[in-house]
Length: 74
Image 1 (cartoon, helix red, strand yellow):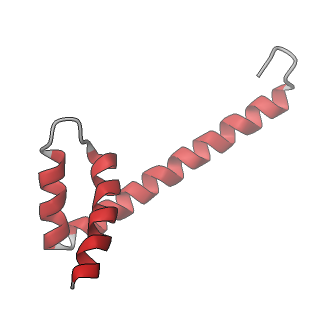
Image 2: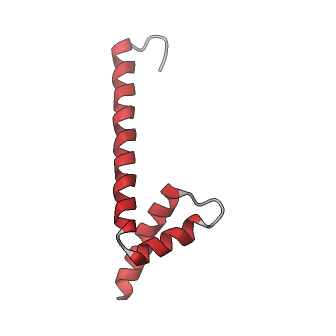
């Protein structure tokens, strides 16, 4: 954005970013609820967050990929 960007555009962009950030938080909460209700997923999650450099969001993303592999083997 530049000094010529209208204030209404800036405000709209800020509102959209806030909305998307809230949606991301809602998805994280939902994913953690799913993980907490599945013992296998919970174990994988705990192992992943125990690895240096892997935090909550990364663990959730990795579980999604791992889960596909697990389900394809069953």
